[in-house]
Image 1 (spheres, rainbow, N blue to C red):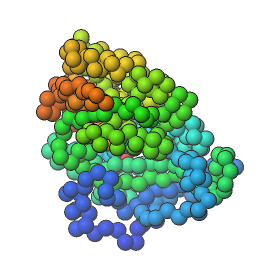
Image 2: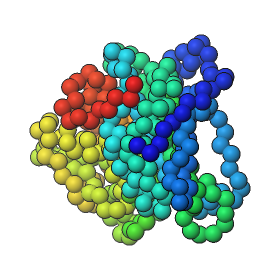
Image 3: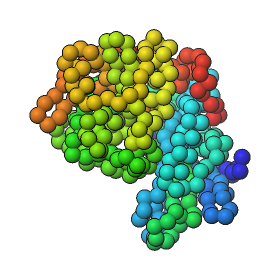
Image 4: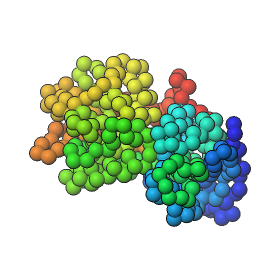
Length: 365
């Protein structure tokens, strides 16, 4: 391991009373812990100056490359407190590997996997009291956000010679504060999330920024989120702005759009493909036309539709709308049987309520 993360304690941490009030009702992405991890990469020296410092503002020069050329990437994963008080993460090695792939695509330096894991352990150790007790069957966790950006101050289109890596942490409740219910989706036909040869397979901010116009269009039509199609033909389903999609068919298939270079390969997505086999389903990754979704719901070929991602875990999908039409929901009030079973299985593994037969959990504290 090249990096060590020295602790420089926050001189003014939140009081026990303040922290307890936040943990009682954390919401999602609204509150942050007392500390953050930082490290620097410079050309010729590599990664250095790892530290855990007080959470606070980042100082950037106006010419910082990230502000002009969007050379940045990030990850998202959670820390789960188990019944015995220990804290674990779910498949952090997969997040480290995806961060490395994203770094290669954005011409950023690769952070070694062992340093990535060590950075998570460092911030959890510093802010252990911020990891909430999930409660009986609950879903509270500590959301971890590692990110990397070009911090060198210069103007010119080239990879930065100085890069900063950081991890911040945010206590999180259920992603949908009002309770789990099917989301209504809008087919974005005027906007694409990513194109062939672009950065669709990387977890970078630009992909999320490009999805916002389609999401706003969906909201204007009474939908919760937008589903994006391939940019070249507007025929094949890709993903939502931040989640992958799955379909359960009446012939027991569990189908998801295949990885084509324009879809983010979600850690939850790959886990569901493995769990599907254990549940007696027949997983398939293939190209799926949007017309297959519309027709499958109409004929009953498609029994359930759900979306998945780290933040929301598994979310049932209800009605699908587009300009001039809609396909009714197959989800009922709270999603279908397969959707619910997969969601429960994932959560039980993550929170230590079920045996981790896959070796997916890594202890952080």
